[in-house]
Length: 193
Image (tube, rainbow, N blue to C red; front, side, top):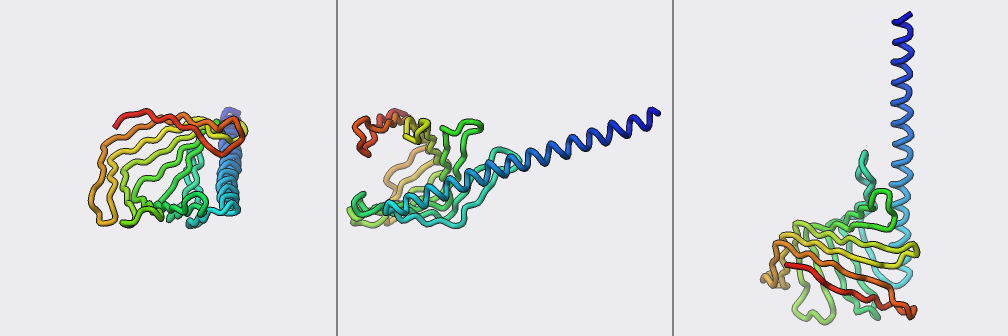
């Protein structure tokens, strides 16, 4: 009788573990594909607004932890009315905050290239061991706060001459959409380097 009861308990435990794993996997997949779809929808909207955005296929990472969206070989070019500047990065990882849809961390370590029509000497190149940009948005999707952290960063000119080096740059940004319905954003910079 005890052996029979032990087998029932064992199979009940195994069934509970399997069911829990399947439920967790299903919820994780729903969150991951939702995050990927939001990213791809945002890129599509920016393209419709005149921005040129190119990236390798959107990838989902993070299992079994919180899902993240990864893009590689990212290139962004602003429309002419926004200055026609461009930026490219080796990799971007979008990390939504766990259980808080109003916070997002954008991680972009590695090499970045900046170019603009007014930069007559060629592009600027930045290398960063860590480059994080955290943003908070309100329930209507408007920017509220930003935090930039750069570690072991170097900015070079087109000839690879160092312009700026920093071991740590930490900026806190107060971002708030303007109340007069324009697209201008107010930013207050504080921090240390």
